[in-house]
Amino acid sequence: MIQLTVNRKSRSFDGDPEMPLLWFLRDELQLTGTKYGCGLGLCGACTVHLDGKAVRSCQTPMKAVAGKKVTTIEGLAVNGDHALQSAWKQHNVPQCGYCQSGQIMQAASLLHEKPHPSDADIDAAMDGNICRCGTYQRIRAAIKTAAAAKTATLAAPRQERVELAAAPPGIKLPSTESASELQPELVAGEAAL
Ligand code: FES
Ligand code: FES
Image (cartoon, rainbow, N blue to C red; front, side, top):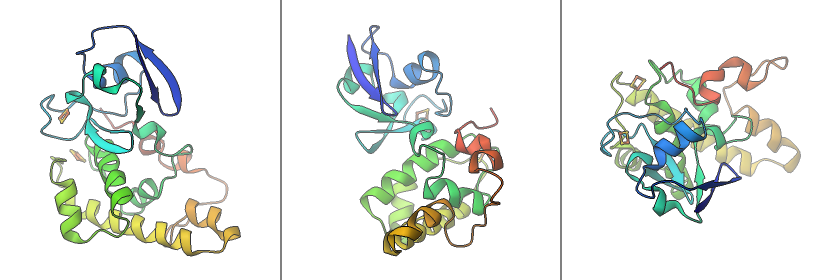
């Protein structure tokens, strides 16, 4: 029996320890925001976090996640309002959307390691995440916006942080609508396919 944590919930798995984590997430937990692209570790569509670091879940066997913490796009932020998710909306990054949960998870890992990434840092970190729609320029812009928003949030007085976290500079969220109502497919990590 393999015990692990997925999006802050304890989970167990009693199957083939060689089975890819991606199948466990999608088929057993119905966390379908994580996508199957190539199955070969070449596209990044299946990117999740393992103990906070980006990994390709199609290449990660269940035996490698025993006792570890897995985070998927559904668990990146409780209300789908991570700075990257807000920035993705601001820049209208997705086209077909299929690659985007993997892109966001890779970017989140980058910002965790480098809160102020340069263009070269972004290019190096995102190099393995393929977007067949060519949204690379918007992805780069959104990562910079998210990095700036995080910095502003940390620098703000305590009472302003919640508001800044919900609406980084340049983003005006209608007070009557939640983020999930505005773009539920991105918040939930559900792409069009
Ligand atoms: S599906 Fe995992 S890298 Fe392409
Ligand atoms: S938005 Fe279509 S593959 Fe990236």
